[in-house]
Length: 274
Image (cartoon, rainbow, N blue to C red; front, side, top):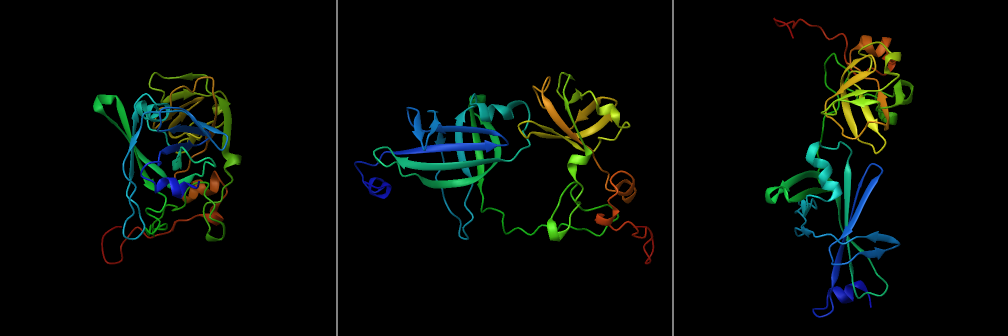
């Protein structure tokens, strides 16, 4: 008997929701029944969970899906001390327990927008935005000012972009020490470049967690957001840019792709300074 037949039956419909969240190289799976289930060879452990209804807007942009789990669940507990920077995608599917062929239907696919701790911290609610949400938003990319408008290391193909090869401006190393708040890290080998070289850049962990580098002295860098548990872990540190044409020339040799208007006059011809 097919999924539709069970789903439309008042007596035999026993749907099971199965969830998957992927963030970098990490994947979490669970289901909303009392027992673990195996679907297409993948195990989905049982987990207490509630969710909101899935609704679509008038133009196909769905409302946020709200999923509530115990705050001890590994994925949501990552948000307790700091906010992971990697994009987390969530997939909600469903199948009928009595369906012998285990036909799975996709109900929702989106991006985790926020995690809110509720019930005095015992629970956590994930707000997920549908992939269709926001695709029609027009966002300006280039502004008329002296600073470069490109995202560092971005390559937009025929549309341009920074196009600097990030692998030419990175250091791969192991974190040997960290401050109590995990914001200041010691990574041997960073002193191969002058102080300040890594400022404005970022660090990338093995599970694709990121944080901006605020300062660099010797082998030490200070991050905008601390990332716990990095001592002894391998990371990559990428050089930063202040988006001035001098830095583009001297540090990256990339003036041909400079995305600003370096010679904008500082004096307004109508009076005053810009």
